[in-house]
Image (cartoon, rainbow, N blue to C red):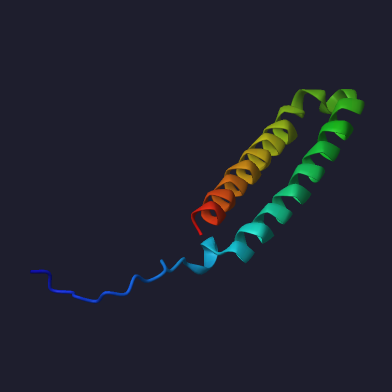
Length: 82
């Protein structure tokens, strides 16, 4: 016999940093970071003394894009389950 005989199924509680609003706010911020990184790539590619450092904004744009995709799939999976 189970100890908890509550017949009601409760909705899972998500923490504040994993809420829909927080995820959309993070996606918005990461899109601004991607724009900033692309601007850094353009400036770095145009100046010969900065061309050896173009890898950093490229890496920043890649990581930001990866985070946007990952959070977007998390939101899609969550909306599919509801």
